[in-house]
Amino acid sequence: MTPTDLKANTEAAALQISWSDHDTWDYPYHYLRDSCGCAHCIHEITGEKLLDPNSIPDDIHIKSMKLVGNYAVKITWSDGHDTGLYTWERLRELCKCHACSAEA
Image 1: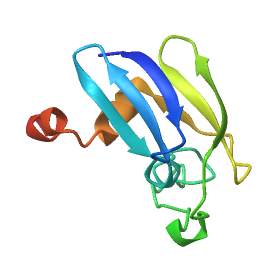
Image 2: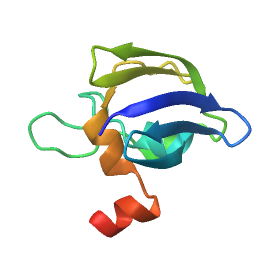
Image 3: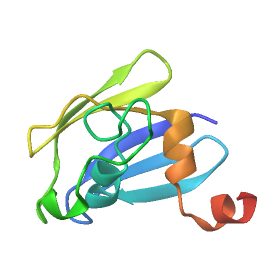
Image 4: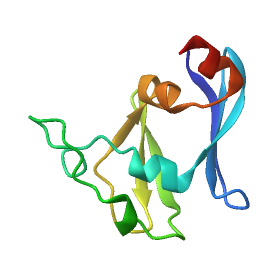
């Protein structure tokens, strides 16, 4: 399961991902930013969430993104955060489309 296309959908305020094995899904920016798994957002040892969702600006958006190898995308957010990698596996876990919800 790999994305065939990734693009920032500014009208929907979401990262639109088309997957090789099913339809396109929109990941809302706020949801993605809140789901960052980097060491600044999640405690490395305890797994405790460090990021306060209320601290994420309502108008959060992607400033830039780049592919990392053949397994992830690195997003630079409008709030300056840029240390998280979103692996294909993690993005698929975050997908809430009908097909993925049925698999869960």
